[in-house]
Length: 234
Figure (spheres, one colour):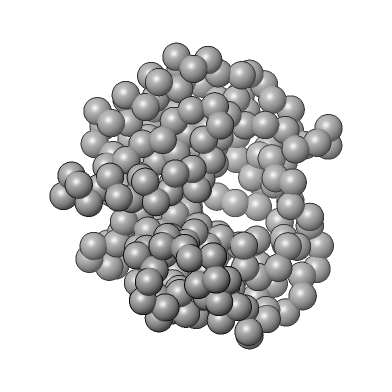
C-alpha cells in the first residue's frame, strides 16, 4: 500500500484510519521496487488509501511505482488497485500510461447502498472509470470487486455484474464482507458457499475472463493466478 496509511474518506466498511495524511514520499516508488526485488516477487499488487487532498489523487505516485517495478526486469506483472481519483480523466491517464498489467477499481457494493456504505463515492463514476481505462489502452486488463453480505439483493448483484461486462471488465472478485469493528457497518447476512459458487458460475457464463468468488476472497485473492489463467485462454 502506497501513499501512507491515512485515508481522506470515511467508508462504513473500511478499517483504515481517517485523517490528514502526510505528503507523498518521493522515495517510495524506489523503495517498493527494492522490497519486491529483495522478496523475489514476480507479480506485485499496488494499492493505496484515497488521497482526495492531492491535486491528482496520488496518480503520479502510482505511475512512478509501476515504472520502478517494471524496470526491475524480473517482474512479470504489476496490478494496481486504484481509488476513483474523483473521476479525473487526467489522473487516470497518468496510471494507464505507465502500462500496468491489470488495473483494478472496486465497485465494492450495489448502487442502492452507496449512500450508506460509500457516501463519498459514486457508483456511476466508478463504473465510468473502469470503462475509460479499458478503452484508453489496448491490451489493458481491468478488474473490479464486490463485498457481499451488506444488505444487497441477488438481482442487484447480477445487475452490477452486467454493468461491469458492459464496460469490458475482465476480472471480478466476490467475497464475504466482515465487519472491522463494532463502529463499522454490521454484517447483514453471511452467504453460503453454494451462493458463492452460484456467482462464480454466473460470472463465467457472463464472459468474465476470470472470476474469484468465495467467503474469503478479497481484491487481491490469487491475483497472479487469475491473471495467468487468461494467458492460457488467450
